[in-house]
Length: 315
Image 1: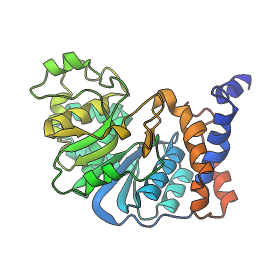
Image 2 (image 1 turned 90 degrees about the horizontal axis):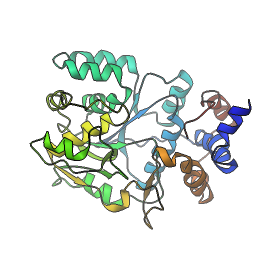
Image 3 (image 1 turned 30 degrees about the vertical axis):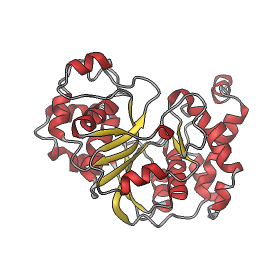
Image 4 (image 1 turned 90 degrees about the vertical axis):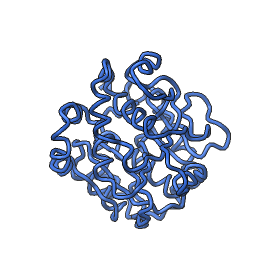
């Protein structure tokens, strides 16, 4: 019991308060129906551990962007029925792809790719590579991780997505090296330039840029599977670099220090995940974000969801 308490309070009372008591209030909001713009489709991967964070990411994106992009939510196989129920209620017109359905669909597509098959079977994050591409219905995809919050209109991102002359992928810049192979070593193995510091959390991906033939080839690189939490990012970076790539503008950079003034969003990556609650959600609530979303018979929704929040949420 003492250990659990210390774990919950590791980053202080304020973090625990906004994580455990304020964060579930996103479940009190009314459904968002306007996901009918098929010019671009948002694809997100979620789990039993982070689906409430995902709701914050999505609600803040749609709220501040005023976009109506189609939405596809991918279950990594761990989502419970209560979580799925909330996701379906809040985004009733989104596609929710359960893991079993995805496995049935993707299996035949990877029949010619043994390395891809093995990677997808053994790494949950591989769904961002294969399933996002396989279930994409639009010509353009917006990648969005569940640890990103928006605070203002993401003008530059939306301009890229909406510009038909843009034929390259564009993703945010990481705070440090995030590939499974060191940059200088990796570059010697390639016949194209790989920009450093590509992060796969936010950005524009074009249909066809995640080519399974390419992925099968890249999975043969020595050391490519050396870090389970960086392999999908490495593969997306490699595919994007070969396809054509530019970095998102600096206001979307992943930063561990204070973000740029006026940045429309912040990516609360692992080392600063606790700031998503203590800083990000707190800022949104104090700015009236939750009050701007109509409430939906709150108490029952929140109580049911809290039963599926992990006892030891990831910091």
